[in-house]
Amino acid sequence: MANNPNPGLLSRMLMRKSVEQVQRESETSTLKRTLGPWNLVFLGVGCIIGAGIFVRTGNAAALHAGPAVLLSFLVAGIVCALAGLCYAELSSTLPVSGSAYTYSYTTVGEFAAWIMGGLLLLEYGLTVW
Image 1 (cartoon, rainbow, N blue to C red):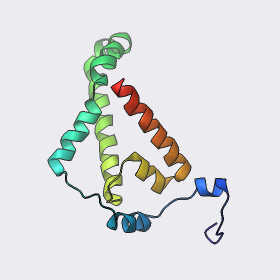
Image 2 (cartoon, rainbow, N blue to C red; image 1 turned 180 degrees about the vertical axis):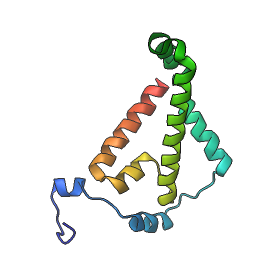
Image 3 (cartoon, rainbow, N blue to C red; image 1 turned 120 degrees about the vertical axis):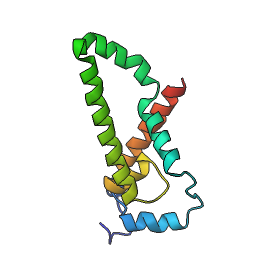
Image 4 (tube, helix red, strand yellow; image 1 turned 90 degrees about the vertical axis):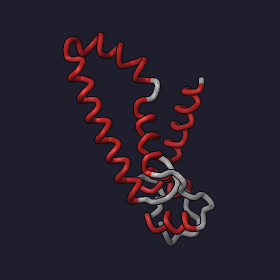
């Protein structure tokens, strides 16, 4: 697949970039890191909490958790912390400016990254709406 100068559509969609390629491209990028550790921590906490905690958790706790509301919030908090640690590990492996699109492009391929980009647009578009 790498030797073919004119790959087909399916081959192009399944292509992945190596970590070294992403790092080389980031060296020529004009985007610079400006956020410090505390900025990123607070941004991550804000994204995790979001507005959904005020809307969906009360309904789910009332209908499904019953008297174990505190336990369900504790389990959800642990799962969110573990997801944040996984994201931090991935972002430290690929030290480039990017988001879920960049990470999925590097790990899974272009087609999955294209779907991820569409889902991000949908998410942010519906959040504003």
